[in-house]
Image 1: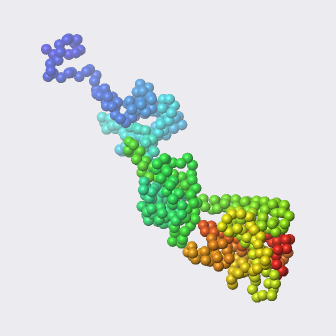
Image 2 (image 1 turned 120 degrees about the horizontal axis):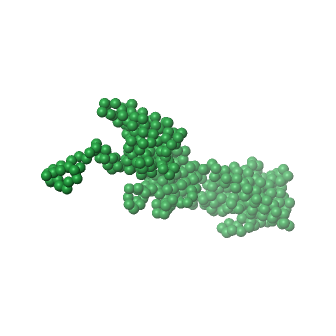
Image 3 (image 1 turned 30 degrees about the vertical axis):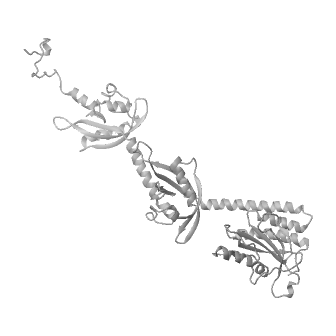
Length: 464
């Protein structure tokens, strides 16, 4: 009872009778369906380079439909720039004569004129006689792959070749990854710093750094880099450094909710530049102070008052206390220099310097006192408490007739018109740095102005 569908009869096929093949069916419909169902973009070329197949994924990526693509001669003028067409076609069609698959990367054109970077895998299609009859090509966008490769390359470059420090700090604020530059800056090996508290690596500045890292973990990266002054522990001792630092919060890309992995800390050593800026700023400030002092002293009717004005202006940002001692009358009749206190800053409270020593009684300076050495040598003398404890340091200062909190001293000779007339002593307290050569140069400029004013006031002793 079965009949061909071509006969136009209405007899239905029995349940066990197969449907006859359609006339002219050669499996091309099945092939097209398979190609369209693939996740990868697929196209094929015959031996002359004409497009013979084009699936839906290729249409999605480039925008060209199968009707627009099939039958075109290669990619020239529509899917590839004309300047690149010859090279692209040669590399694609070379798969006909090569064994296995050929992998290439091209920039293809979309229908709307954009460019898409794709990675292709091409292989030869063999005819019934075994000879190459064309090429099939599978391609996909490679932005994700390239982004991954770039991320890996960037990570390796940062950890090996970067000219700035890179430290990945975990959520416990301990180094998890350290690049070579950062290890050198921290004065340790790349593996020896891993997992250690930052307080073991830095002597000073660790609280500020940990505060910044904690803020980044909680709030995210700050809008601008920060400059942190730290002291690094090294086998040679502590090194004071300034690091210009940037921070980024690291979160797991695999979790639905952001899970903090730590902080990426990038820093560059800018110590020399900042020290240069600080020194230049300090020189400008001191020059301005000398100028202001000269203007204020010029309005003083009493030269002695002018001398204390110079002393007060010099103290700003330079020292905590200052003393002026003159050579005692009749000093040429004794073996050792005797000095009389004629001016001093108030001890224990702020205020202007005060004149003293009207009675002319010598100060009980012991042998080898820095002020006495200054006058005898006619040169600058520096003294420091060193590594003494607090009580010993206080005793050291009081024994030299200085305020009890003094730990650094700078004595500069007072000279006027070729005569050595006394000494001015500048003192710094606990927490201040020791006097340096640049400080001595500034103090000598101040001493010249003080000596001139006191000489005019007649408060200095006999010629030496």
